[in-house]
Length: 399
Ligand code: HGY
Ligand code: MN
Ligand code: MN
Ligand code: MN
Image 1 (cartoon, rainbow, N blue to C red):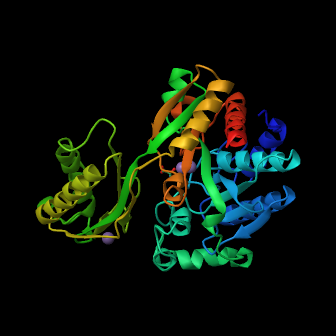
Image 2: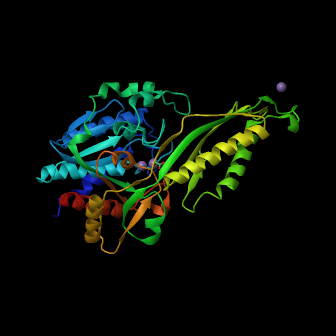
Image 3: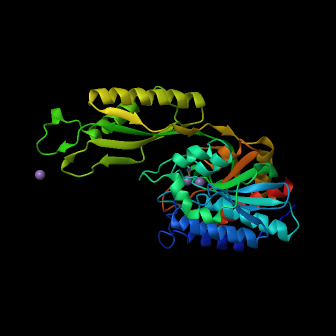
């Protein structure tokens, strides 16, 4: 009941993973899916899985697994990062899984496997690697996805083709648990050490393009312009106004990426392509928001004499966590940090959403200092990282 884990080995491996794509000492990482740093990290992880006595396997998407023999519980997360990412987002769940799988083998504990899913951070889509592994997205469709610079996924993943061993059968896993940083302010503010996740919100993501007329920024009178930036700006204002009737205080929406063409100070931009992402715990609300977004884009296109086109609508529906795994995490948290844990929903997306389509799945959170994530400053106190590891190890030992 008291699993022998090695916190020093866990922290040392976590810091080693941080060295791949490190953005500077004590800062975050630049390790987007299929980048050189990402692939180097995946090679290192496969080596670590082998050293732990697991069988390393890599599927065509670049998801890396360390497999125990026979039926096993799967632990893990993702080792790719945002273009400017924190060092713990994803990394924590894999290295915690590695430590628990290794210590379990050393001490005759339960069979534990580990996974690092590919492109959770959505260089190409939304949790792309686990979407394909879980059958939510076909490999053929994934291959056609483009990143913001026009690189196609099928070309990007060639860079790790030499590592691929083949598909990993999900049928061998009895369940999945993902440990993750909270990436929000709730635990940091409350002083709780652990969050046991109740469910994960749903998400929709679509690229929108407004195209007008590129022209001279000195000679073109304002009333004759078909300025794509002005259209985006007006769209944003109109959308915020119209969404007010549809959303709850928990609903979020973001324009996080925009490409203006040709992006020069003396040219009225002829074309703007931007990401439109929205998240909510209610699938119907996500659909109503989609209609508001489409209508607003059509209205703005008409007013500003633009053409409006959009890319594929990507997304994942909200999910609830498995009751039995959740109870094991709650019991373990109650034992390790009595009175200092809470149940909470996840506003961030995770591979668990996809994996929960295949098997019982659950998540636990540790605090993020000041609630910061998807930024180089992201961090968690060492003590909280180790507490999370202890809670997860204890839960695994009871399953
Ligand atoms: O954006 C997300 O929620 C995830 O971390 N990719
Ligand atoms: Mn993550
Ligand atoms: Mn993330
Ligand atoms: Mn000129």
